[in-house]
Image (tube, rainbow, N blue to C red; front, side, top):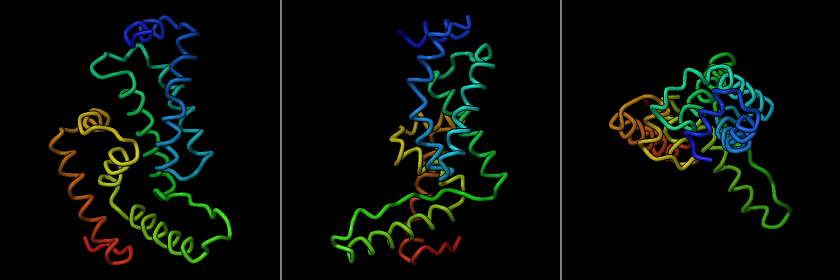
Length: 177
């Protein structure tokens, strides 16, 4: 089913179209929400709230972007609200894989912790761009549409975010902005 047909069916409250949209995007949305929130329950709640908003507001979808971009933007806005409410930001989950090579695993976990702290401490305007670009493999154009900013602004934020993150990692996770 093409995106245009799917949108028309959604606007007509077609149940099969609702199922298709959830089946198509739920896992992708969960992944980015989890990366931003680092809380499985909150990420699930955000995804659920996103689809509720999509279904309630599908009539306002004008087709100026893809349905995916529109849904993604809703999920990001809800995630931002959650972050603002709890004043906590991104971290990454890591796990121990066994007792072999413990020294290597300890070094990896320390590196991940430094990266996690650095990303957590990074200004959200840079963190969002870095997550969308590197972890979600979105293009600058897609990020521009999702964040409703020019491609030049996204490029600047990515460049500045990379520099800040690099400097922070070189200093063991400390920012001097």
